Amino acid sequence: MAPLQITGQVLDVRRAGMYTVMSLTAPGLAERTRPGHFLNIGIGGEESGLLLRRSFAIYQVQSRGVYGGSVDIVIGVHGKGTQWLVDRRRHDYLSIVGPLGRPFTLPKEPANCILVGGGYGTAPLFMLADQLRERGCRVDVIAGAATEEKLFGTLEIKRAASTLTVTTDDGSMGVQGRVTDVLDDIITKTQADVVYACGPMGMLAAVAEVATARGVYSQCSVEESMACGVGVCMTCVLPVIGDDGITRMVRSCVEGPVFRGDRVRWSDVGTVPPDTLGAPTGGH
Amino acid sequence: MSRALITSGPIDPTVNLPSVDMSTSLGYFESPAPVFTASGCAAAGKELDQFFDITQLGGIVTKSVMMNARSGRATPRMAETPSGMLNSIGLQGPGIDSFIENDLAWLRQRGARTVVSIAGGSVEEYGKLAAKLRTVDGISAIEVNISCPNVEDRGQVFACDPNSSAQVIQAVRRNSDTKIPIIAKLSPDVTSIVSIAQAVERAGADAVAVINTTLGMVIDLDSMRPALGGITGGLSGPAIRPMAVRCVWQIHQALPHLPILGMGGIRNGEDALQFILAGASAVSVGTVTFHDPSAPFRVQQELEIALAQRGFATLREAIGFAHRGPDVTEVEEEQA
Ligand SMILES: Cc1cc2nc3c(=O)[nH]c(=O)nc-3n(C[C@H](O)[C@H](O)[C@H](O)COP(=O)(O)OP(=O)(O)OC[C@H]3O[C@@H](n4cnc5c(N)ncnc54)[C@H](O)[C@@H]3O)c2cc1C
Ligand SMILES: Cc1cc2nc3c(=O)[nH]c(=O)nc-3n(C[C@H](O)[C@H](O)[C@H](O)COP(=O)(O)O)c2cc1C
Ligand code: FES
Image (cartoon, rainbow over all chains, first blue to last red; front, top):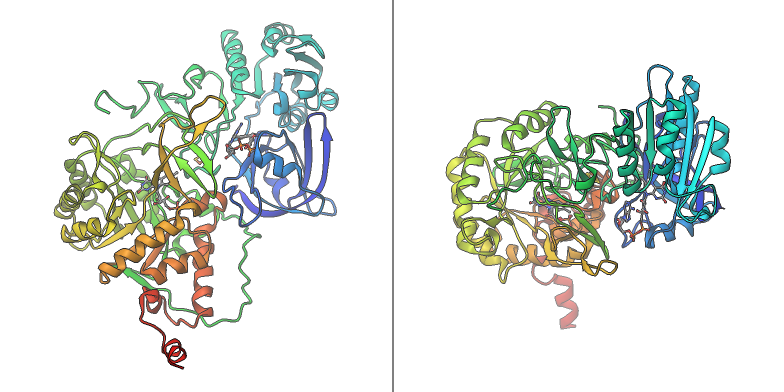
């Protein structure tokens, strides 16, 4: 279904640890949203000098209610744009384009699923967990971050999961270490069929490596810098192996952000591998 | 494809203004509408068709295509800058055969007017691309992106030298159907854009597209290295608009009969009107599409309003209007 371009009104802005959760009116968005979709928000108003929209995973959507539908996003302040966004207040208007991207693929049969979220990367996993359980899947969640305050939503996600394992680099909560330190064990214990992951690129690379080594199918939602978010500019590319075995520079905004973990050439992200279709030959 | 609901368009359809004849021409290309997409900012139209009806535009200018598939440059390919951005995409694309088979076929079936942008690494490549396009229907014009390094001339950019620019345009002209207008796309990174415009016109260009991006650079303060994978990048967006308007003005002043497709940071109808008044016959909307995916269509609607508000019955009357002599009333006031 085609994305919407709508004006949303801020309904609520609340703190959640290091993050800000923002609710916006978004009529029509819920019906179109599937887990893993993202949306793009315009920054700074109509005459803004910050021209490029910022991308956020869709955390929650409500299709009904007094506002005729709304959407929640989780914002971690990174630079000027996200700072401007968390400074918005109730009743402010924001320009929204979405839902965008290719969402997570859900298994047709009940399956054992592990959901791995790094930092605010847990945000899109809530909707995913709910829909997986509706399909009779087992859901186990691993949430990891550098420190406790960089985790998002660990209390709430417990509801939707058979087990929740938390890891922090500094041990301030849960197991000290990385998500991949516990992933292998949990794959064994739960006899996992699928691993879903969203978080920083380094984490995704590590998760995909463990899953692939164990012969488990994985789906990773990547975060590449985007200019348009709708597939027209070719900014957001990374090297991905196609069904035909050929590596192409693929747009993560329309062909992703969710990719099969075994198809992304993680160690080559940020480069154009020499065997990529159309890679520069010696002459260039 | 189903169309997105646009509920945030700033256009008030109730505005009670006379309609304006928006038709225009670029050489023999007659178009009922004056706003185009900009090459590289609309892919081949399909994605934007989700946000507005692309057949309503003057046309889609497709991403510059080369003979062979190109991977483009390493990421990061983009850096946001004040009121603009730098890009170093590196002409990623599928190559001309795949482009004709897939993208062009889709555009033709969709019924959108199409301007195909071509790019080459040698004069010969441009000629071959034109010859390929000669075999297909449904092309309104060819835009020739000459802001490419010439592999046969130590990587010198064609657009920076009048002779190389002219050679490329001659090669395209020789290999194209005589009825297909050729639009030479000029770089602002030259000492005299007028001399390049003169050279390409003499070589057979029917119109010029003005301007391509201007070279820029950002240093990342975390890594303390260039922010872009390609080190330098092309600057675009509202930041370059005054430079683009100046280029259009200079070319129209020197070559008033040469049609101009103006672009550079157009954000709304009034920005577009500046280009028309400076001498452009039509305009392209590029980078602002990333901010507002309906921008090309919105700008076209706003341009009609901006013209009507100033009493123009046709777009053609407004082309180059800023070059006219002093207004009679002003003269009278001065004498008084
Ligand atoms: C598909 C996707 C989903 C995302 N989901 C979330 C989310 O749910 N919550 C959240 O807090 N953040 C999310 N991000 C990251 C968020 O978009 C960036 O943090 C934000 O764009 C940074 O903007 P800024 O102005 O604060 O930073 P600046 O560094 O000033 O931004 C400058 C430019 O770089 C781009 N940029 C910088 N960092 C990133 C990044 N990490 N990813 C993409 N673009 C970047 C910006 O869009 C902008 O164009 C997501 C990104 C993508 C691509
Ligand atoms: C991401 C990006 C890609 C571009 N790719 C091309 C291209 O392939 N060929 C071309 O002639 N111009 C290309 N351009 C230049 C634009 O067509 C246009 O000339 C320039 O950006 C100025 O207009 P704007 O400020 O409205 O974007 C590109 C610009 C951007 C931002
Ligand atoms: S961000 Fe423009 S193509 Fe993906």
